[in-house]
Length: 149
Image 1 (cartoon, helix red, strand yellow):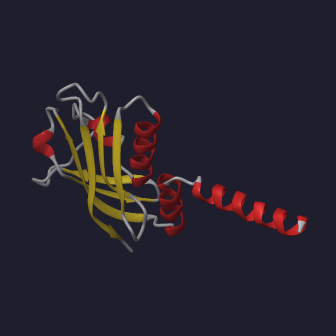
Image 2 (tube, one colour):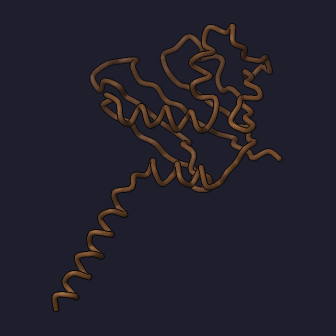
Image 3 (cartoon, rainbow, N blue to C red):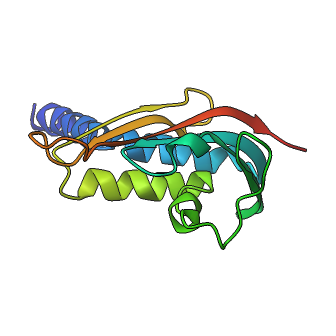
């Protein structure tokens, strides 16, 4: 009888531990397990920002490094662009995960996210830093993702 109770308790504790893994953790693991080293995607950053008309960017990444970042008109975004630092902070899927983690663990009032079912990367993130404030929201979307080579 004692063994049965202990065994049941062990299963319950294991089930609780398994549920403690967040959607973020599960999808980050899925992304890492996919081991994709060369890819391209479109990035849309939505906010009350001066660069709204430059979206979406097309970004190519190889071995964790940004190969290219271009605007919809085909012009290259380079380091002299006033918004370069913002764009660069989202310029790889790993960085998108880092931004999401910072948003989720920061002081934002609300963060909603959906993940890609195949590779696990964040597809759509909406952040409302202050619920009662206007124009403080930011969103970012990853679309047109394709594995290269």
